[in-house]
Each structure stands twice: as structure tokens, then as C-alpha cells.
Image (tube, rainbow, N blue to C red; front, top):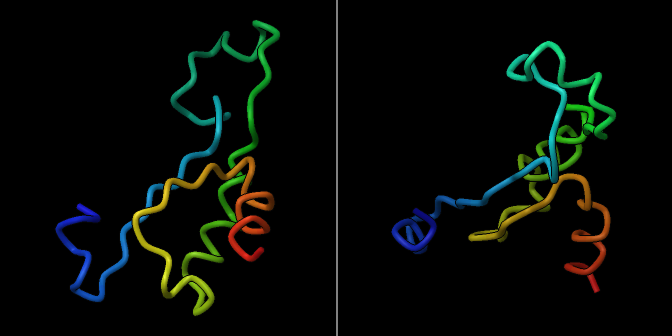
Length: 77
């Protein structure tokens, strides 16, 4: 989709939480397995940033929300 919309003024990016996330889609016993799960709130900062003017030129990026701070710092460097 990003390639198809490249020159349309519409930006397309992929935002992933970065690992298993506590959602209503987990089986009831999943949290008892001892695995580490991300809090869904990890998606908040990159969503807010992507909706801001600062992200106007960001297109065709795969963003890992759990590493968003590092991704943003590397992009700004």
C-alpha cells in the first residue's frame, strides 16, 4: 500500500507493539505461563507522534512501539 500511495500525499506506515501484548485476544491462562507481555499503552506515544505534524514526511516505515524512543532518536540523528 505504501508503494501504491507514495505520491498521493497519504502516508502509510506499519506500527507493531514489538512483542506479545496483553489484549482481550489472549487465552485466559496466557498470563499464568510466566511469559512477559507488553502493556497495550506502548502503542500510545508512537500513535500520537504519527498523528502529529512532526511525522508528516514519514512514509513506508515499520515502527516497533517497544523501541519507539530509539527509532525516533536514530531518525533524528
